Image 1 (cartoon, rainbow, N blue to C red):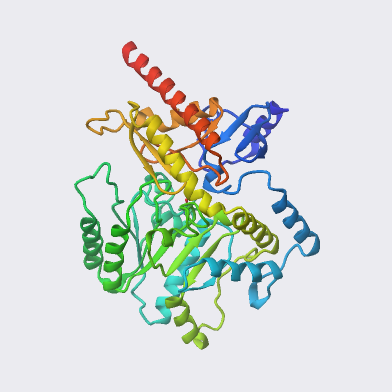
Image 2 (cartoon, rainbow, N blue to C red):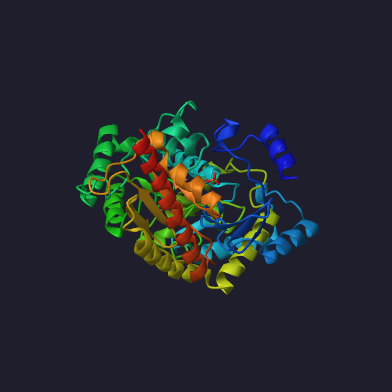
Length: 449
Ligand SMILES: Cc1ncc(COP(=O)(O)O)c(C=O)c1O
C-alpha cells in the first residue's frame, strides 16, 4: 500500500517547496493524526513539533471541527459573498474575530490563504491611495528574510532569494530593508534599523511609499524576535511619512504568542492585519479604521469594491473556524500557548544551549528557533553546501520527530497549543539525540577528509 501510494504521488503530484529530484525526497505517506502525534502508513509515529506548517494549533483529530464542517456542508455547501450575499457562520465569525482584534480594526475580508491575504492587502492599499488622489504613493517596503507567501505581490515582498530566483520576482514597487538580527549583527541597535528605513523612504521619496509589511516575529526567516522598542521606533518613522503598517500575522495570529494577535504582544497599532493558518482553512486580512473610514467617505466613488474570491467567506470554512475558536476559548489555549512556550524555552535552554552545534536559541510564545552554528565562539555560520538544518530535520524525522528547517540554518519548534510538558520533554530529548548524531557524523566526515 505504502509503495503504491508513494509511486502514485511521485508520478503525479507536483509538490510545493520540494526538491524536484525524487531521490531527495524519500516518500512519507501520513495516514492519521491525534493530538500532537502523526502516524505514517508503516505504523511509525511522529511527534509533530511544528504543528504542520505552524498551523494545527488545536492538535489533530478534533471531531468537533469535522462535525461542524459536515453539518454545514449538508445544510448549505456554498454561498457566494459577492453583492452582499452572506451566510450564518461567516456573519457570526466576522463579529467574533472583531471582538478579538484590537479596537481600531473595523472590518474583515475573507479569502483562501496567507499569500492571497497579502495580495489583497497590497491591492487594498493601492486602491486606498488612488481614492485619496495619491497616485504615486504605491511602493511597499518589507524586510529581507521576511516571508509573505508566494503569489506575485506576496512573493515579491518575501525577502528570500529562493522565492525570487527564476520567478521574475520581485516586481517593481517592492523594496526591502534589513531584518533585525541581534545574533549576527549585535552592534546594530533599534535606532539603526529605524534610520535605515527612514533613509530608504527619503531616498525613494515619501510621496511614493505606501506601506511597510512585517511579521511580528519573523518565522520562516529564522524565528527572529525583535522587541517592543524596535516596533515603536519603526512606527515613529512610518507615522512621520504617512506610511501604512501592515502586520503579517499568518503565523502569530490566533494565539501562538500567548495573545490573540502578535500586535497585542508587541503593543503595535497596524492599519491592516493579515492572518490565515490559526483560524483553520480560511484566511483573512483585517482592515483598520484609517483605511475603512476613507472607503466610507468615498463610498460613492468606490461603489463596487471589485476584488474577492469565489470561496471568500465559504460557509464550511467559517463553520470550521467557529468550531476551532470554540475549542481555543473553552480550553484556554491562547493562555496555554504562552505557558507552554515558557516551558519549551526553559527546557530548550537547559538541554541544548551548551551543545556545540547550537549558537542561539530564540523563542517567543510557542515558537522557537535554534540556530545551528559551525563555531560557537566566533558565530561562524555553516556554509550553505552543508545544509545543516536539512540534515537535522531529516534525521529528526528518522527519529520520529517533525520539526522545520528554516532560513539561516535554523531548526524550529512550533507545536500545537495542546502540547503537554511530557511531550515537550520527549521532543527535546529526541532533538538533542539528533544533534549528537549529526555532530558525530560531521566530526567523522572531517576526520576522514
Ligand atoms: C508569515 C507568513 N505569511 C504568509 C504566508 C503564506 O501563507 P500561505 O502558505 O497560506 O499562502 C506564510 C506561510 O507560511 C507565513 O508564514
